[in-house]
Image (cartoon, rainbow, N blue to C red; front, side, top):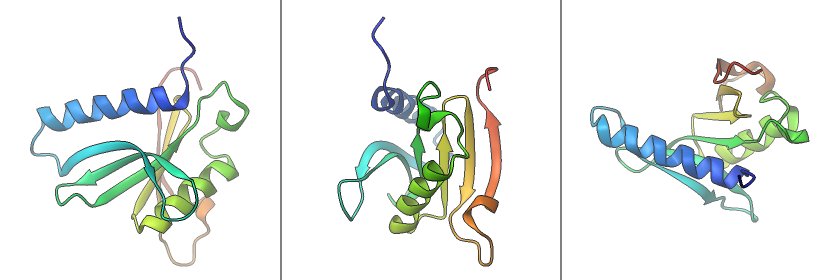
Length: 128
Protein backbone atom coordinates (compact mmCIF):
# COMPACT_ATOMS: atom_id res chain seq x y z
CA UNK A 1 0.00 0.00 0.00
CA UNK A 2 1.49 3.37 -0.97
CA UNK A 3 2.26 5.84 1.79
CA UNK A 4 -0.34 8.57 2.09
CA UNK A 5 0.81 12.17 2.22
CA UNK A 6 -0.88 15.45 3.13
CA UNK A 7 -1.74 16.32 -0.45
CA UNK A 8 -3.41 12.98 -1.12
CA UNK A 9 -5.36 13.14 2.12
CA UNK A 10 -6.50 16.73 1.44
CA UNK A 11 -7.53 15.77 -2.08
CA UNK A 12 -9.55 12.79 -0.83
CA UNK A 13 -11.26 15.01 1.77
CA UNK A 14 -12.01 17.58 -0.92
CA UNK A 15 -13.69 14.93 -3.08
CA UNK A 16 -15.79 13.83 -0.10
CA UNK A 17 -16.83 17.43 0.62
CA UNK A 18 -17.73 17.94 -3.05
CA UNK A 19 -19.97 14.85 -2.88
CA UNK A 20 -21.67 16.08 0.30
CA UNK A 21 -22.30 19.49 -1.28
CA UNK A 22 -23.72 17.88 -4.43
CA UNK A 23 -26.05 15.65 -2.40
CA UNK A 24 -27.18 18.50 -0.12
CA UNK A 25 -27.98 21.57 -2.23
CA UNK A 26 -29.41 23.38 0.80
CA UNK A 27 -25.94 23.71 2.32
CA UNK A 28 -24.52 27.25 2.06
CA UNK A 29 -21.41 26.04 0.22
CA UNK A 30 -20.52 25.83 -3.47
CA UNK A 31 -17.25 23.90 -3.51
CA UNK A 32 -14.02 22.94 -1.83
CA UNK A 33 -10.55 23.28 -3.31
CA UNK A 34 -7.09 22.11 -2.31
CA UNK A 35 -3.75 23.88 -2.43
CA UNK A 36 -5.05 27.36 -3.18
CA UNK A 37 -2.20 29.86 -3.27
CA UNK A 38 -1.71 32.72 -0.87
CA UNK A 39 -1.16 36.25 -2.06
CA UNK A 40 2.36 36.33 -0.71
CA UNK A 41 5.14 33.85 -1.19
CA UNK A 42 4.79 30.21 -2.13
CA UNK A 43 2.51 29.22 0.74
CA UNK A 44 -0.76 27.47 -0.06
CA UNK A 45 -3.86 26.72 1.97
CA UNK A 46 -4.37 22.96 2.29
CA UNK A 47 -8.17 23.12 1.97
CA UNK A 48 -10.58 25.98 1.30
CA UNK A 49 -14.37 25.87 1.46
CA UNK A 50 -16.34 28.42 -0.59
CA UNK A 51 -19.83 29.86 -0.13
CA UNK A 52 -22.44 30.09 -2.86
CA UNK A 53 -20.98 33.41 -4.05
CA UNK A 54 -17.58 31.71 -4.48
CA UNK A 55 -16.08 33.53 -1.50
CA UNK A 56 -13.79 31.55 0.80
CA UNK A 57 -15.44 30.94 4.18
CA UNK A 58 -13.14 28.38 5.78
CA UNK A 59 -9.49 27.56 5.21
CA UNK A 60 -7.20 25.25 7.05
CA UNK A 61 -4.11 23.22 7.45
CA UNK A 62 -3.81 19.45 7.63
CA UNK A 63 -0.91 17.56 9.14
CA UNK A 64 -0.57 13.81 9.35
CA UNK A 65 -0.42 12.50 12.94
CA UNK A 66 2.64 10.33 12.38
CA UNK A 67 4.77 13.34 11.49
CA UNK A 68 6.48 15.55 14.08
CA UNK A 69 4.45 18.60 13.02
CA UNK A 70 1.18 16.63 13.16
CA UNK A 71 1.23 15.41 16.75
CA UNK A 72 -1.41 17.95 17.80
CA UNK A 73 -3.84 20.25 15.97
CA UNK A 74 -3.08 22.76 18.76
CA UNK A 75 0.64 22.97 17.94
CA UNK A 76 1.70 26.61 17.88
CA UNK A 77 3.42 26.65 14.47
CA UNK A 78 0.46 24.85 12.85
CA UNK A 79 -2.11 27.20 14.38
CA UNK A 80 -0.02 30.25 13.46
CA UNK A 81 0.39 29.07 9.86
CA UNK A 82 -3.33 28.36 9.45
CA UNK A 83 -4.21 31.70 11.08
CA UNK A 84 -1.81 33.66 8.87
CA UNK A 85 -3.29 32.16 5.71
CA UNK A 86 -6.90 32.72 6.83
CA UNK A 87 -6.12 36.24 7.99
CA UNK A 88 -4.41 37.09 4.68
CA UNK A 89 -7.52 35.90 2.83
CA UNK A 90 -9.92 37.68 5.22
CA UNK A 91 -11.69 34.46 6.17
CA UNK A 92 -13.68 34.44 9.42
CA UNK A 93 -12.87 30.85 10.43
CA UNK A 94 -9.98 28.46 9.95
CA UNK A 95 -9.15 24.94 11.03
CA UNK A 96 -6.22 22.81 12.03
CA UNK A 97 -6.48 19.06 11.60
CA UNK A 98 -4.10 16.24 12.34
CA UNK A 99 -6.50 13.61 10.90
CA UNK A 100 -7.38 12.36 14.38
CA UNK A 101 -8.57 15.71 15.75
CA UNK A 102 -10.11 18.66 13.92
CA UNK A 103 -10.16 22.11 15.57
CA UNK A 104 -12.29 25.01 14.35
CA UNK A 105 -10.93 28.48 15.16
CA UNK A 106 -12.23 32.03 14.90
CA UNK A 107 -9.79 34.16 12.92
CA UNK A 108 -10.76 37.53 14.41
CA UNK A 109 -11.70 38.14 18.02
CA UNK A 110 -10.70 41.41 19.63
CA UNK A 111 -8.73 41.12 22.82
CA UNK A 112 -8.17 37.35 22.58
CA UNK A 113 -4.90 35.71 21.61
CA UNK A 114 -5.07 33.12 18.86
CA UNK A 115 -4.57 30.23 21.29
CA UNK A 116 -7.87 31.14 22.99
CA UNK A 117 -9.98 31.38 19.82
CA UNK A 118 -10.70 27.69 19.38
CA UNK A 119 -14.45 27.28 19.00
CA UNK A 120 -14.87 23.53 18.79
CA UNK A 121 -12.80 20.40 18.44
CA UNK A 122 -13.85 17.07 17.05
CA UNK A 123 -12.27 13.70 17.64
CA UNK A 124 -12.45 12.27 14.14
CA UNK A 125 -10.99 8.86 14.97
CA UNK A 126 -10.88 6.81 18.13
CA UNK A 127 -7.11 7.25 18.19
CA UNK A 128 -6.13 10.53 19.85
